[in-house]
Length: 620
Image (cartoon, rainbow, N blue to C red; front, top):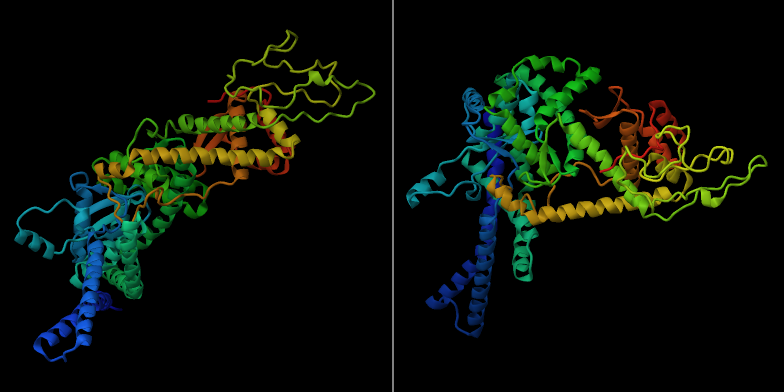
């Protein structure tokens, strides 16, 4: 078995190879200057022959030397001043988590490595060490020049970045076992050659990012040259840097073998489970709220509920919920609720591109209010958008049924056309939009259209004007072109709303807000219009949008006419509850209507649940 020192020596050898590339680049930049110095010295000392040719050679060499020195200075200046990319994270002070700092320091003492200089949380299922020694990432240095030079020579340990879902799902012992190989990496990171090679690579990466964002001809031309040089150096040192990092990881893993090795295997199983729950929570639960301008303020706590629900459904995950009786790692924090809120806000900014701070259009929502404030409002907003699109479609009359000898053909004027041009999307659900004649039917059951005696046999009753589910179903089922047209217009409408929201976010000045709340990004992370950094889902197609909007309309009708209620499923997001139980069989009937124009499966589902599609629904 190889010792940790073997991995460190291998990493140091690759680090020296990276530093030799830096030295070679410097030598190439200084070569024209050296040639010019030799020529001028030979001319002055008389060792070179006299003549106009030698004079011309001296001046050409001098010009090339000045040019190469200027270009080298430009590259060095950009590399030195560019801010290396930082992983977006929430800084955790020792005052807010003394037990967590004590656990990490005890772990570093057992591993005989330097303790991390600080701890930060990131909304991701991963943990790593991050070098934040660049002067742009810390407070301004104070003191005399000698003191600053001494501080610069003293190596500073990297920052330990921990995935926030781990603290809520894992137990204290599992977290310690999981962090052991990560904390062990501070030993190789303290080696001067490895640290210098990492700084060089990170500086080149930041310089490439700066060059990519250059605007204007005066800045773009020189920065484009810097970017090409930086990419050339990165390609030359890519293999050495990759092998160096692998050697560092191998050395850290080998050193951590003596600390909680058996428990670490269990902790690694929890990593995969936490990742699955975190992904479902973000894509199915958080994303619908973010699209509405609301952000769940307890995402990390929601991971526990999501994974507990997964353990109930999946036999492979059975038994993991029994661990919840042990002490969770979030107890190591003094105020876990405040830290969860900050991590949840950062997650919304990373994965959706929301503002850096709460506001009137970007407010938090708790899990208790999620069904009413997110699910119900989401359904009604989408139903209203669907009706707005249908309002702009041309009127299409219902297809006339062939007359039968038993009944004369009806007067076309007595059947209203199937059009949304005259409907109001804000008709309340408790008030009928038209006056009905007094008859034997109750107010909610009065038919609309010709009396039953005068209605042709086989002709359905005309749907009531207003935002009703029946009119949506009839339009999609009876007009072959309506589905494609509505899907295209819904896609354009959603794209326009997202563009308006992106413009509003850009006008808020997110970078300035990030600076005020202490979130540093670096030049290698965010470009103009670069948020969200990690989009959760690709843009939905028109057919997917149409299916979602029809589903929302069905759910609104079920809530208003069948006593259903909006609910929250921790793994699937918004859910429709009928008699307290979730209905999961709505997707197939909706797709049958949207894709094939077949409304019978959906009508059968509505009859089974007790939904009355002819009744108007309440929109927002």
